[in-house]
Length: 245
Image (cartoon, rainbow, N blue to C red; front, side, top):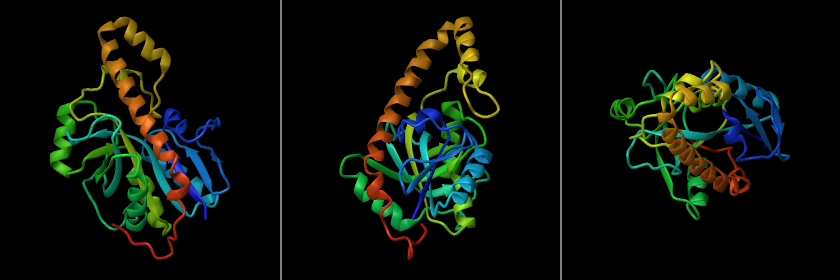
């Protein structure tokens, strides 16, 4: 059985492998694990999921960071989604987490990490302000947010494959993202370094917020590295009789 993992950002990719993987490419890091570096956003995640299936993946994992919507979650906290809510606010059996896989993963990871479960909602763009995060939390009941997991889950459902979302919190619910992030991001969801540096030079007041976000992101990466240590155990389960949450 081959597990396919979709990763949106190169920094998240580094928590799983030191191999250099080009965007929109799939690479086996073991005999049974294949990674795809998708880039940010639902369309990229969908294409990467289909690519992994073409490489023989029989189950899919969404792997990376997320924004907290609940103030109970702190930077570096691990969230294993038990409910998925799309950008239209819909949550149904067409894109579910595999219950048995979630249960096994939570049990394994709880031996070394504090594991949170809860709803994960989708956004089509970066949610930059604490006010918008609070609104989404009240509207959906979700505890966290990302841009890729629901798209991956929908591909898994369409192909009758098990699905799991593994997300570490990078920015807390009460944090406004620095303006430099939105200014420096391109259409593919990547930060353009030259734009970022120019914006900081012109707006040095942004620097403390960027440093704080960098520390939060580092905490999330360390958590993902901790999960990666258990990955071999997490993928060794029989999904022939699995159920969805």
